[in-house]
Image 1: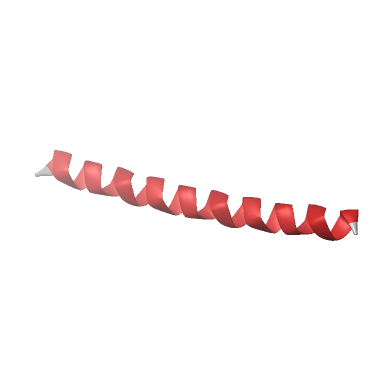
Image 2: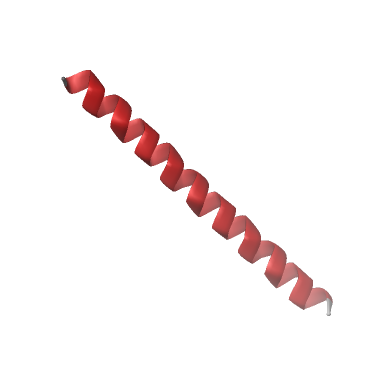
Length: 37
């Protein structure tokens, strides 16, 4: 049971980390695009 909880916890961390990275990259890319204009 503990291993299942750990795997679920790791999965949630991976999901939040990847979505956070995507958000950061999109924001960063928009800033660069505006800067080039």
